[in-house]
Image (cartoon, rainbow, N blue to C red; front, top):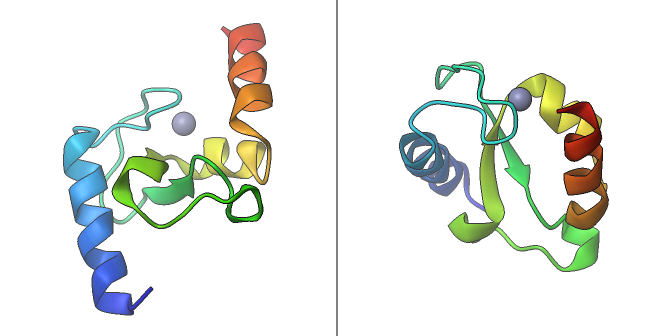
Amino acid sequence: MKVADKAKARKAVFKRAKGKCEYCGMQLSLATMTLDHYYPRHLGGGNNRANLKCACTDCNNRKGPMHPFHWEKAMELRA
Ligand SMILES: [Zn+2]
């Protein structure tokens, strides 16, 4: 993905998420948000916006390359 495209995707995803982490709901800014691949690249997840989530660094680090199914389970346990 080109840098310009990435910046565009960042903004679009940020807007869609209303500036909040889509996992824990923390309010973020464009500077603090990270783009998370919901389906990790190695599981065939692409750079399409449907697969990109607005996430805080914490959630992104915790999720890492986890399969979404396991991640959802981990989230349930945390809630
Ligand atoms: Zn979060």
